[in-house]
Length: 137
Image: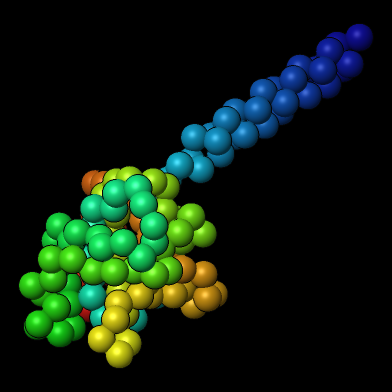
């Protein structure tokens, strides 16, 4: 009689542990992890303030964290044609954006998987970006 009770107790403990793990996954899905390859191949890393509007609208640059070209360190506004929800845009807010420059125009640096991505600007992403910028030299 004790062996069936032990099996039920073990099964119950495993079930509760599984539910706890699922809860942990739900909490962790909000964690943002920046793509190090995307930032390493970018030509500029900027913090921008995006207002709701069309993707081709002027976007104000709050800070240039890093730039390969000294002239781009004075950026005040840029136009991003490829800004959209597929890249991580979640509406008005402050974002860190890795940029590449082609023919005098900026675009979001693509991920190696060809997906574009921008990241909400907060303390967590700032720490990750600072580490990446330090490795760029």
